[in-house]
Length: 127
Image (cartoon, rainbow, N blue to C red):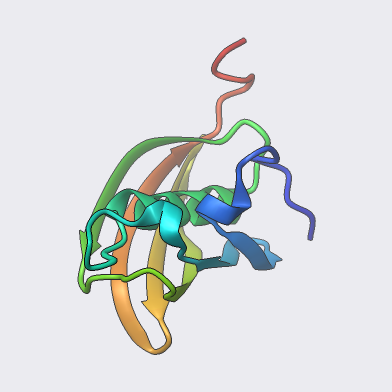
């Protein structure tokens, strides 16, 4: 399956697609020095959120999909150099709305999880 959305996103900051199928996506992100929040090498949560958000968008995989709401839990700290895997799966569909559950792991350890409400407008939101 080919990615149809968010085609210009910087994948070095938001994740590379490693698997994509109907209603699911798996992305990988190697954290780097651009993501560091402090002198101990803590990765800012915004980059983990971006990975999870992009994973949700790829799971829906419609050209005009946008995020309407998100609820995410950060469970473990992430440090520079960690490789993260985000797995998204479609859990509910209602009209133009899609609910996606995303887990972000470092190896077998879950570092974040969340539910994303995505909406598929008929045309681009900036049109």
